[in-house]
Image (tube, rainbow, N blue to C red):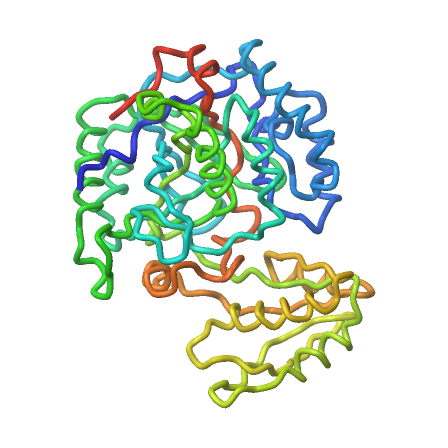
Length: 432
């Protein structure tokens, strides 16, 4: 298929005078049950230019009415005062070192939101992997609705077990010198970015990517007119908010304007699902403001239909770990069975809150608090991601985490998403 839904983005990067170690901060949806970590982030940043002032950490969702207007003002200030500056046209090659045996390698690209559809079972080249948590969308949409720029924490996967599409970019005899190379705050490891100028190597990359996109032999059970090309590895909510915003914007545009408006595109890092550094970890469940014993009685007392099988899960509460058994359909993922059971409990107990926790150590610590109970889920095999999306449409929300919380993408590069912001930098970016 013609690869008309992927292009080189118009990238903005902090000015050379900006301390990148204070500018780059972790994805907004991390550590939502740990306000102390975000308080420490604010202390480290201080009054320095930082992406922290351009995002809304979800730990502060209750304060979104005050924080979102400040975010929009800061975006304009960073553009007008030269805090963010354009890069020449090129392909950003990123290596993220987190302490694993190999760095995670990816490239920054802009993806056409017209090629993305979050409807379960949709026949689109770019598809979500998980259902979204609806209460986490309004704030992101409110930010994007009046935002001049976007900063991505979206990671899109391609399914390339032969390592023939992305990896040759990083194995050239002579790589460009780093545009940035610095340690990330709070244990996030180190990140290196190299800008590959538009030329023979970028053209060859897009040829390989086009061949990959056109391949219909990857999945024997694939149906529909359009192959599944990319799937969200992280940032399902950001993709959903970007698509909702574009759907609103395009209603007031002419057909010609829809072709060129920058909000039609979303910035994301493309990585290979089979990259050595990619490790899927479970996202555990934590119930708060509840009676742990009552939760256990409710879940273990759920009626078992004739076609269900027992599913045993580990739980933790009050400093101890124990097991419970709930009924589950035989072909259902454990996370789906548990989430369905928890949704039933939450519907009957509206005072109870749920959070999605990365790491068993964190879950065990948080579940020790009074009125808390945690549920430990098994890891999801990454080789099953694309086949599961093809079979089920989307996985249950928060089915997996791409590594630990600190391996999530840090906000660093930006891209204009309004015509006014784009007009400030007319000479950079563009098609491959």
